[in-house]
Every structure is written in C-alpha cells, then in structure tokens.
Length: 158
Image 1 (spheres, helix red, strand yellow):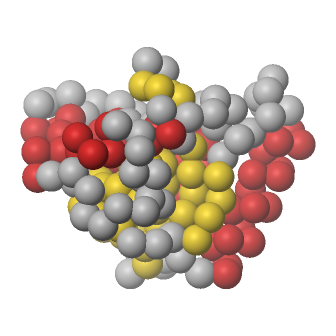
Image 2 (cartoon, helix red, strand yellow; image 1 turned 180 degrees about the vertical axis):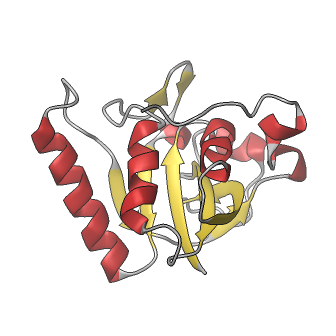
C-alpha cells in the first residue's frame, strides 16, 4: 500500500473520482499544507490557515502506478487556475500534488512538464508540487460526501 495526496479544488468530487479507479484501496478527504494543527472545515474556509482541501489516496502499486493516478488528477480539474476551481475561490482550493517521497516528486514534476509541453492547456499550469506534511482528516460528514448523497457518478473523461 502506498499513499498519494492531491488537491484539486473541492475535495468531494476529487475523492469520488479516485474511488472509482481500479487499484485504489481507499480515500479520505482532509486538509494539508497549512500552519494550523487540526483545523476545522470552518477554519480552512477562512483561507487563513494555509491548508488546501485534499484527497488522500491509498493504492496498490501492483495494480495502478503513480503516473496513472496523476493522469486522473490532471483530468479532474483545471490546473491552470490559481487558487480556484469553478465557483470555489481561495487558496484552500489550489491545485497541488503533495509528494510522499523523492520518486513521487520526480514523477510529478516530469508529468507536469510533459503536460505543459503538450499544449493541452492555453495557460500555464500553476499546480504546486510540495512535500506532504501533516494530513488532518476532514469531519466525518465530508468523507465520501457525494456517495452518501447518491451523487458520486462522476467518471474520468476519456
């Protein structure tokens, strides 16, 4: 089992997308990248804690590669908008890859460079690539939020 952590706007849709990927063993949503210990959703929403809403993905490396997880990450959001995804605005909605080891860092950087060079996006990719730090699980009602409401039907494009 290996862990990957991604920020791509509101964590509900991102978690739902990863839960539908073969080889993903579990997901949970939470907050990472900030300076406040154990923040609440309300704290993070102020934009003053420095945290991003993230999805932590536990996966089986024998069934899916980190590169394939990155493909999902790039597909589920717009990595060219700084601190914004759709109607959600603020640093807590930033595009971020939080790596857990040097290999993940190298793969993430190469993936970002490759995607930028392909010209798929008209603007530059602004995705932050940073070391994973403390992960604080979000409140229970945020976990599998869309599934609990029968709305987790979102599929990866392509």
